[in-house]
Amino acid sequence: MGSVESSTKLGALLRRVGQGDRAAFTEFYAATAPCACGLAEHLLPDPVAHRTLVERAYLEVWERASEYKPSSGSPETWLINLLHRLAVRELREHDDARPTQTDLLRMIYFDGLTYRDIAKRLGVSTETIRGRIRENLGLLRAGRV
Image (cartoon, rainbow, N blue to C red):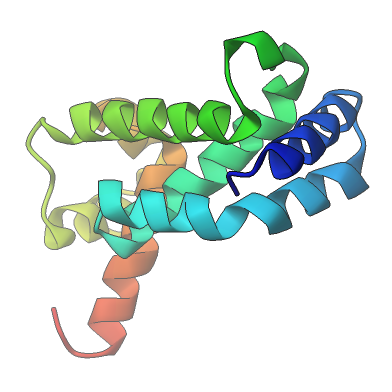
């Protein structure tokens, strides 16, 4: 990412994504994912959190590509700002006391709560809870809990 030629091509791809072009989305993702993933990893070092951040960012790209305006910056800048905004939101959500691994597993398996119930109770996204549960089960399988 970064050259004028690349920005022009990415801008054209975003316009097509804004029209629902899946092939353009795939091409935009392939061209920008390495940078987006690196930035997400820097912003949120937790592997589950940064993967979730990238997923949410590209979901927003798909949903909001038609809102991109070249006059407000390059497609790269637009994507970086999107990632940064989502990361800040995620960090603010986690400023609250994060439940322990045991707490989450207890809520799911003993209290019978759904991911949505837990997310609502903790004020975070369902995707965040899903990722944390998946991470916790992996740790449990590995004998690290």
